[in-house]
Image 1 (cartoon, rainbow, N blue to C red):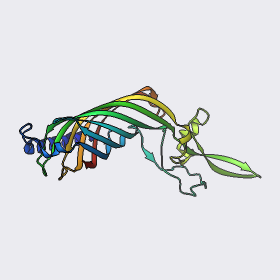
Image 2: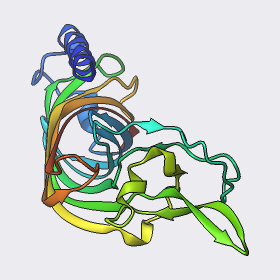
Image 3: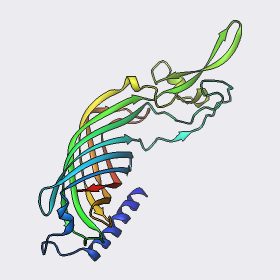
Image 4: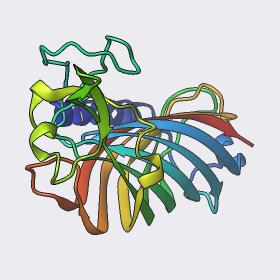
Length: 263
């Protein structure tokens, strides 16, 4: 369904482009007078989401070079949030309101991308109307961040002759394997801050290619939509879910928007 949506958007914008594009090379367009560009954006990927900052500079009539910083949150297709199913009554630091959690998740995986790329103009737009299109490609260094995923597990303890239940935040281990994978003993997620001091870095490489459409009404502004394909390769397997085959690569189709300014 996601792929169908992306290719549908691509088809619509391509149709808009070729119906409104002007003849390249006949005269210098107003947009080419703007040499620099700074934009911020977000993307939905078929395996997560991302946020980015991009600096772009023209290097000629048809081309420009850009540098991009991107933060990506990867999700496994098997991830699904569930609510507390335990019949055990307990009070923890959240009171009696446990958080929903992702069952059988071992680690969260984030990645920082540092990219260098090129844009090639395919079709320009009129000075204050229409849609321009560019072919864009980029590559660079990836720094993956594996963060342990913590759950509040329920334990029965005795103190002063009184038996009570308590929740303990724990990451997955061989010792708590049975409780970690038994919904009766899971009170809820421990919160994102748990495990931040236990992050494991993993280096890697990435590459992306796509089509970028800019529909800003004025050439001083950036309002762009981008559709493309991205691939990441890391130097070790990334354990996100338990009982799943861990991979060292990620491939996704993305749909993103950017907003910014030219000067």
